[in-house]
Length: 218
Image (cartoon, rainbow, N blue to C red):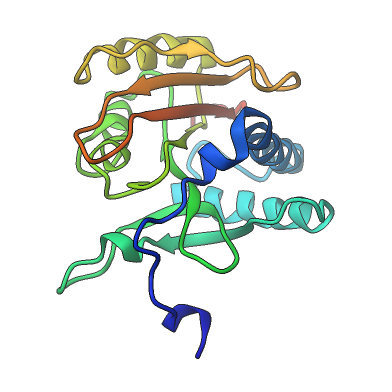
């Protein structure tokens, strides 16, 4: 019997809770280091599609992960969440995650374009059906108390994007605050927001990355 055929756990593991802040920080650090690797290649332009950026970023995540044998969770691109699968249709698919080797438990990240001044991008990032809302309603990370949103800033000013994101987050249910995260020493564009979720879901801590590629507007 293959891994995919094994029965699901009755109560999937909360990887974020098991890891604690220090363990989550190690995953986030690997993600930020992979971003710096990608940024240094200068291959991302102001017109690069979201999926292409994620694919290139994921290549560097894999390379970094292979050099850190103590990280036991496996990086997976386009992870289907089978715990939320319905009788018909495709299961919810998160852009990227670190998955437990033997179970379907994971720490996930959803990626979105977030160019300065682009209200369409900001709306999609916060959207209850396609963006952050997928974490909050349990389509992603229903059994995990933390995850990440990745904003690709291909053009404009990250400070302006931060202000717009902070304002947008505050309009969500419960009026959560976006604040700077102190979890990473070498990356200053990491933020946090705490969200209440409906029972039986646990409350959710979302880490927000802004990945700035310093691209001119084309």
